[in-house]
Length: 287
Image 1 (tube, rainbow, N blue to C red):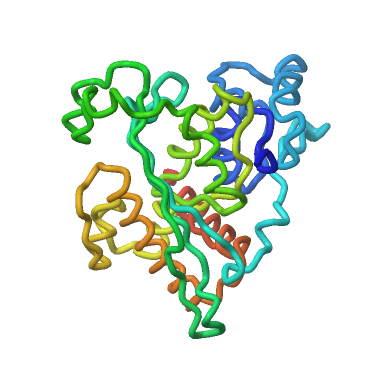
Image 2 (image 1 turned 120 degrees about the vertical axis):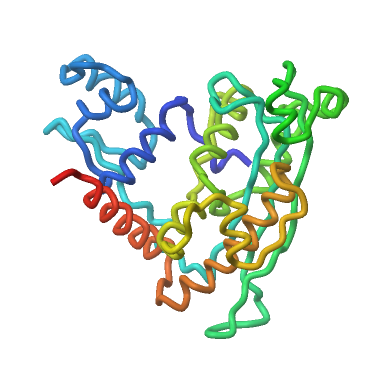
């Protein structure tokens, strides 16, 4: 069960996301400015902080020239048709994983249909996991209005620690998929970190980012907008199981489109995503 857990520092997921949109390499000083909000972080002390932050995490290399790099992950070279995915969605007490908590979680496991192959390959939902969770604190009224989840509904629900092992076992080594995956991973890892002082080390894909590339004609890329565009019905918006099921069906549709584009491996998909992000960033720079 512990194979996909690493020693956790809360800011590591932010660092991964920052490096991914900067071609996997950037000056350590910029990390200080953008993540730690320091005015002048270009000193030996801060480089030591970053080295300690990423120590033991094989994804990162801190270079002697003052740069930090996010290394390619050999797991990204796995073929899509040989991969398993877990699509997740959360409801939470707020937006910041450092002090807010999960109140509902749902996940669907997507696997290739082993009865088919080649151009006939399809992906199927193999299993699901869902739970209301007692956050051990008051749910704000605006969250209740947004999700319909009240304090009374979760009063007798398990706390996260009681479902953590089951969730970790369900996810196992699958690639984690979500609509804005940094949000969901940040919360899941913060909860796991409170229990084990570790975090999930799974690969991840973001259907929000993929939607921006695959469906640039959409006015926005919110989950319900993409679902409506693809003709996918949502039973109940802003509830974890309904949103996770919609995200799963969206992702399965995306897998078909990625296959049609000749994208064979996870690294192909990541490169496709990074190229589009770079283009958008460049286009936004005033000239």
